[in-house]
View 1 (cartoon, rainbow, N blue to C red):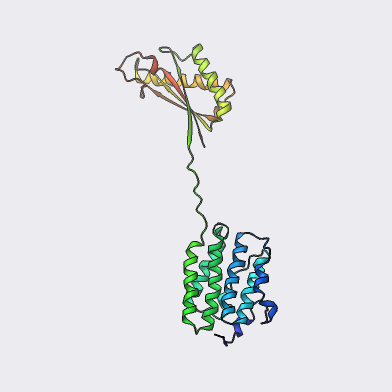
View 2: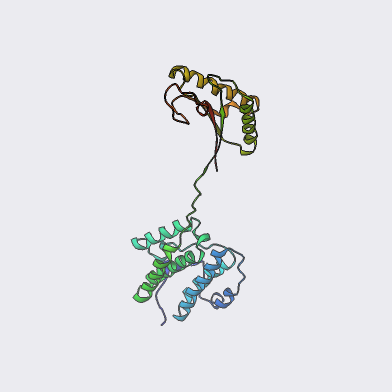
Length: 280
């Protein structure tokens, strides 16, 4: 069926096209080697579908319009969807809302992530407006609107799920003699291992926590735990571990590794715990 509607408003915006045979070369545009990305290639294909539809309607004006849009896409350029005002539809709230959704989606990575869906949404939108402007084929209007409505929800950017940072931890324990804050040979060997691990593990923080057993008063044990922590921190500093990475805590007899009664000597409680941490 031939179409005889005027296009006074659209005419100025249809890329200066005239209804001449050179603008109806659908097969020629289809054969173009598109140097662009997947989205421009999809636009080339989908605009040509609209051109073929209009050719079947003998609507040579819009054959030329959609063919030219496909040709632009075929050169690797991203051609934008038509603005509603170019079809005299600026006052149509439904079209305006659809246009805004489409433009918002095209401004994201959606064209890269879902190129064909975005191309379908854009070309069906342009076709929908063209049919609305003509305004006399309700079935064609509904078909174009349905095509847009189906494609638009699929024109979305991929959700990039960033991996949850994992905390990596290395732990060491240095033990002390009863009532002492000096380092034994074994303790120094342990700290040498800590220094070596520090070079390879490269922690963001090193925590030191000093402890005692239950021999003596809580107050004296708090002081002893502090001395033990300071001793370890000083030895690590001598080994090249910057003290700024240390978070020192002294817990006295409040957190026993081995639960005991009060005034009980237990070597495993007389310790400084070293905890290296970093996120990965």
